[in-house]
Length: 367
Ligand code: MRU
Image 1 (cartoon, protein in one colour):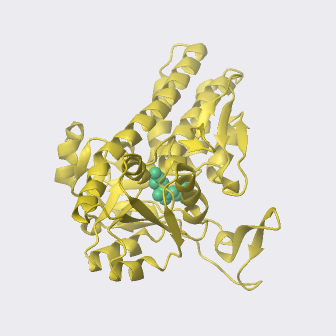
Image 2: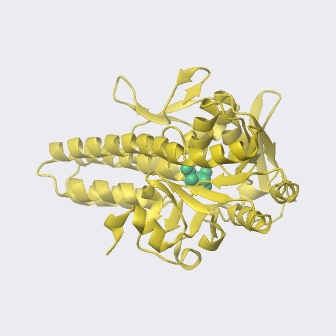
């Protein structure tokens, strides 16, 4: 997608083969590109959310494993170094299953390599493949999901389709296109009138900071709302559909996504507003069936709740919101049960959120 008219991915190799990322902590106020040189730096960038969003976490970790193969060449026990590096990456963020998916693919392939040189080549190729597949899969999610927006537009005789989204499931959470935003971008590009209600998404405000910024860069009309506003809008017919992303979806269709997603799904159900979840199949955890019991939910530091970042007089800074000795609790995600999900928008099509229909689209996972 484009920033100030120039095409970017969220992660790329520059002309000197350095891994570059957009450091998302500073958006929308500052656009910073940084290089990641070591597996330790990659782990830090994921944990501290320089990069974030399930698909991008997976791609970045895959490049982390590539760096680990380079570093392993200097170590007396390279297999142990690779396993330790994989563990370091896996421990950064527990909820997004794409991280495990990418790191396990890498580890399996490189531990079976015949030489250290071969393991470097294999890891590089896998990281590049995972990145390129993510771009293509997100494009396909848009191609599948655009029909949902088109149908509403036709039913409204071409009037603006109002879409609510939560957090950032945009291209900055992936490599390009985004998941939830891909149908929106493709509808907008096709001339369908869309407007996006952007939940601010406390505490880190990925909606207000990142989704708003990327939609604006692409010229998609949007309005930022507080997280508590969606239900009111739905009661007043101001939301035609919701579409969100996911960090992990069970094979039965339960969806873990940014904290607060569940409340939006409840409000949508109560108001007969369709609630869609867009996802690449790399976000499906085929091993688990009960999202509430089995999906690990990240708990982050309380300071994210007790304070807020913003720009004041040209300087981006953190200010305290809560009493000096106030306590906070910061769950990063919640689980929306499958019964509240109208449909899953995947790269292979749209299906109901249940095991039978998901496996009809992905029969290779029928055991
Ligand atoms: O904590 P974050 O910013 O990594 O959370 C991101 C989300 O919850 C996204 O909705 C999810 O990863 C889907 S991204 C296409």
